[in-house]
Amino acid sequence: MSGLPADLALDAVQRNLATHVIGQVILRYASVGSTNDLAKERARAGAEEGLVILAEEQTAGRGRAGRAWVAPPGSSLLMSVLLRPPSDIAPTMLAGVALCEAVEQVALVRASLKWPNDLLLPVGAGEPPALRKAAGILCELHTQAGQDPWVVIGIGVNVNWTPEGNIDGRDLSQYATSVAAAAGHPVDRAELLRALLQRLDARYLALRHGQRDELFAAWRARLATLGERVEVRLADGVLHGVAEDVEPSGSLRVRDDSGALRVVTAGDVEF
Image 1 (cartoon, rainbow, N blue to C red):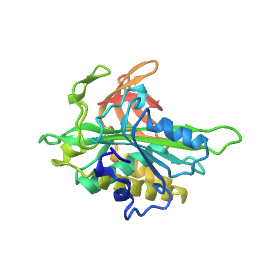
Image 2 (image 1 turned 120 degrees about the vertical axis):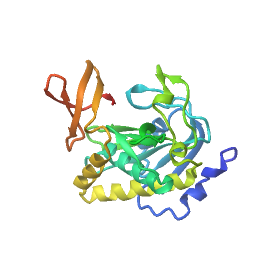
Image 3 (image 1 turned 90 degrees about the vertical axis):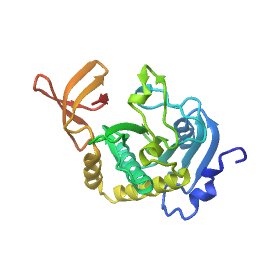
């Protein structure tokens, strides 16, 4: 582990890590192409669920809709978690709620979600404050006949670095923030990671005991998108309307400008 930033040393992370499944094995790298790709390789090779892949840098990191995800080494949490769920565990809801809970616990700021799973944190002194994205989640599910399903949950969190400039044609100052910026002080990455692994573990165990309705309610309550006018970029065009609610499956209900109710299962939302 030489050459890796000392603030995220594995012994510090795993010290008093009270989890049953997630984080029993943590692998940390200075640089990888993508933690999700590496976790998928391990999954295909038979790795047990709960494996966590950490990287200080990703050279081919990606977010939803194929967007690039970049961060300077030592600034963020770039990680993937492998799960082998017995049934549909709603990984998007699981990761979104657990991340909100961990950030609130460590940084003491209110966290919410942009549908389906972008972490939003308050910026500025307005009332209500503006919300900016501080983390993204990318879940990749593998199902194949004759094989047990598995899912890789990729999470990228801007901890002590706020993105600037333009990427993919977007002015990041209008979209992005960090946990440290929202908290008003630097944030201990090891403490945040430990809290996140513990919340993921607790929520996952609850799901395995059938508590999906409780998770859905917690996820729905975090969605800042609901009640807002939205623009949804779909594969076949752009939808404008008001985000009215979500379905238990996770789909977004949008009342479009003609008054028709549209159900969005996948799309890029701005509001």
